[in-house]
Length: 444
Image (cartoon, rainbow, N blue to C red):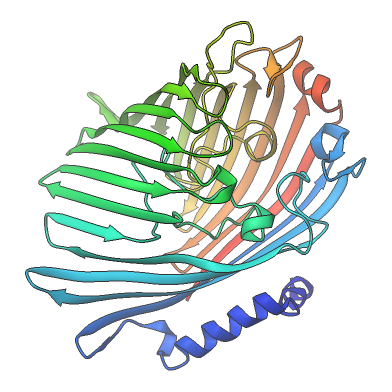
């Protein structure tokens, strides 16, 4: 760890951000909130560290930026100083935040060889928004974080690639590149109207939409959303219109230990990046979470079935479900990144059918032990347009331990193992792919 951090400090851009963070917060003891001339100021810094070692990369094919390199060590580091501020204004509050991220990739580069190379680094603004709010209404303008529900469709506007964000795996850039969001709250109803702009990894996409959600006490959260991507230049996002219905954390009468989650997304409109074909994509999942009542520790058993359509190569329409902007950490680690290997390097909730079972137990409130099993298949017999003879992609097992200390510290360490089935062997190879990794976040 000391060696990796030392290498980062020799990176001139990373060192400059560290010095800026120290200078701008030097007079604030432990970064506690302070009030200056009526302004409430909340300074802070977050540091993220990710370390990985992989063997059998891409099922023996090797890293895509160095074919044949089947073993790789990777380190990703980031530092983000942030200042939030607010001041009374009329019958409400003027508020805002500004932050900057410095990030770098070290050692052998990003694990799969697709999204970042060793030496990639970046310093850039993340948040830079201002707004006004009262008890019922909020309006903000400028780069900010914005998530709808659990983030399946609208979660993170950054793809985090080395060429643009300096790294891939620790994902410190969380704000949309630009945004305008108006929100209304009344009793248990919440509504948003939004305009958002993504980063270059998502093709500098521009979109607008509307969201409404009802939180029914003791029964669950129910919502609907419409989104229109009217401009973009990558991933065939341009022209997609998406409708989302969801029911989250739904209680089952007579079974208080059981919770249900379900969402469905229709993707319509036209494929403006692909010649104007009609879009006809469909994505959905159903999930159950059961808290075992007789277990000595709080223990939750989860099952999910998810299906995201692929393109029927024989039709004129584009049936591909676009992954859109799903987030990294919603309910818990890797909510919608389905598998540390398939979910991060091969399948991205598109042309994908995945079943998983998760066993998660808490020996104490600050520690979680989790084991996952994933069965991954393709929805159509092709891999990004290349025809295949099989849909059977891979089986995967993940195991991890997490430590939580409030908002200040989050530590994860885990191992992921995946064995290729017929479809993955057609594309890559027949070796098992294993990754050992740790991900750490520290807030000050």
